[in-house]
Image 1: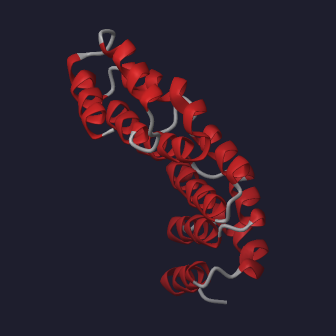
Image 2: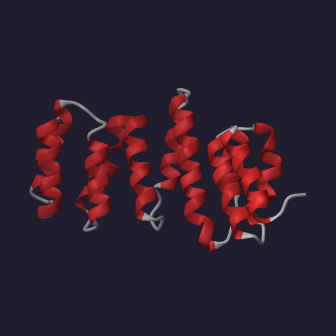
Length: 179
């Protein structure tokens, strides 16, 4: 029965409490005419991070202004899956969110999550981002490389070093120094 800020506050509380029973109630609110209510519903589903919440976020048809928030909430669900040891499920979400055209910050978080889940299998994606001309992607690739340890990673980085831009070379050398 609440409206406006009060309704958004109730929704936020449901998310903070991780109330899984609230998912069916929150799902339709992601398209509420009140953008604050819609945004808080998306965020609450990400905090709840149940399989049903992830499914609702994956199927969400939201306004363009909320698409980044949906992706961020899906990342929260993937992080929760990873924390529960559901590595394959988490990796699948990270791969989906990593898709081209998604905002840089979301892609950065997704590649780091992917490195945490699939380790060496993430290297081609990480090196692709490191070779890009986008500085955010390069920094994210460097952070992802920090999640994967081993001499084989260092050798692979040395192999691509010459093909990197000067900025990406600095990132790669830093990773080499720390690894």
